Image 1 (cartoon, rainbow, N blue to C red):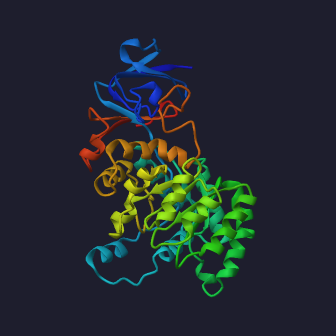
Image 2: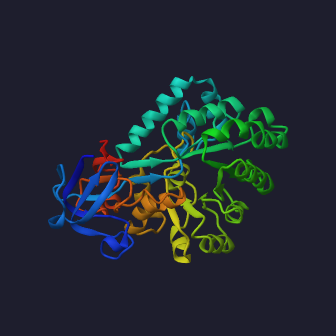
Image 3: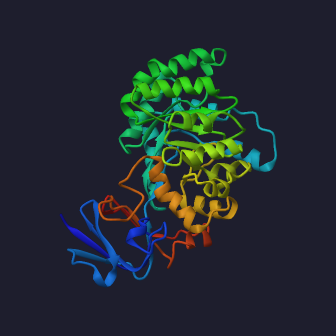
Length: 392
């Protein structure tokens, strides 16, 4: 295999305390990284770097692990511009929300859905994302959910079955019948393409008993639970996620002290994944990351990229929001967008730049990772390596 040395890195974030300065970010100043194939082979001071077949001069720029976007909804068609415009203009809007996207997605061809997915993936990669999770949830029929997962699985291993996004319009008067479909025929068709099972546990979607039935059925089919929890109101989602040892409880906006304590106690199994793009796009209450971190919970940041409530693929933007409005430090936000996302996906091979990890990293047009929050909206990503290949 060909080896590549990235040299003259001004500041390298490894997310390995033992590799760097002992902090959670494991910072190394004046650093180098050696890539062998698709893995990191060596990290350390640039003046001690071993020889490599090729070299790339970082010219004093900062390098960070590739972002791990552990929550997105990228298999869809259409957009909801009118809905967003009305919301931001303070006008009432009576269109169907998620149902609008369901109708557009059902009407789209496989080719159209895949092209839209690839467009968003390219957009995310150019902003430093090297791993992403994505969900179904805009088909809500057996055939449409299965095809969404089949399309997604061609481009990522982190695919989530979200037949329980909302109750399908055809079952509006029979939600119990829809739960039976989601836990039966639809699950059978979708499980071969997915790693995860998810449910929107919220008023107007699925209650605690329905969510438990859906998640336990998914687990019996070999899928690992994750939960849309406590986004719009207080509810049972977080407690259910902890009870079922879900990999993540996502959103976590409305939390009781008991919810925070439960996530802290389950820090090794259930990650609190925060999605500030949703609050930005809906002018909703911000999740309190500081409260969770201080309690000892493990926190991840993700985009929640979707056409309705968070139409952004930018992890740097979410970092800036988390620092400005969720009381995270720049170090905490970067860790949560990389190592935290890896934890939410139960992956040990990504989210860090350390020997043996997958060679995913981004080079910033800045001397420090702090610039991700310090210079919001500025396209700072200069180069991206994904699985050892320079992808951008």
